[in-house]
Length: 102
Image 1 (cartoon, rainbow, N blue to C red):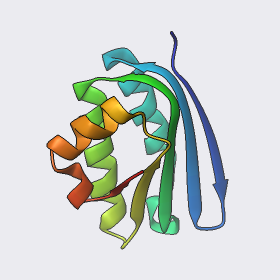
Image 2: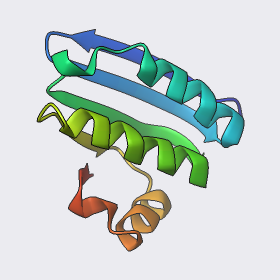
Image 3: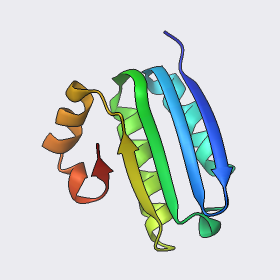
Image 4: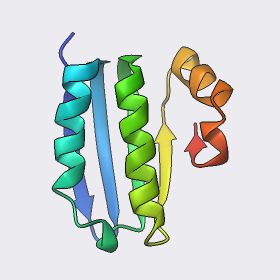
């Protein structure tokens, strides 16, 4: 299933609504979307993973890079509607110590 990413940016919040499978090719697309944002103006980034069926290692790495760039400006990041298997993997990698996984 092809990945879709709808970005809603309002005030100091960016909401990414993701669906599909995020393999290496899609992770590169997602990184390009990240790079279009002015991170200094974002205080909270929310990723809605409700429609995500697969999250590859490249995508996980890109999320971590995005988090670190956001944190430089005291921004916070949250993953919501995360499927249980993906949430368990992210918690096993201790990423829940960096950002909220719901």
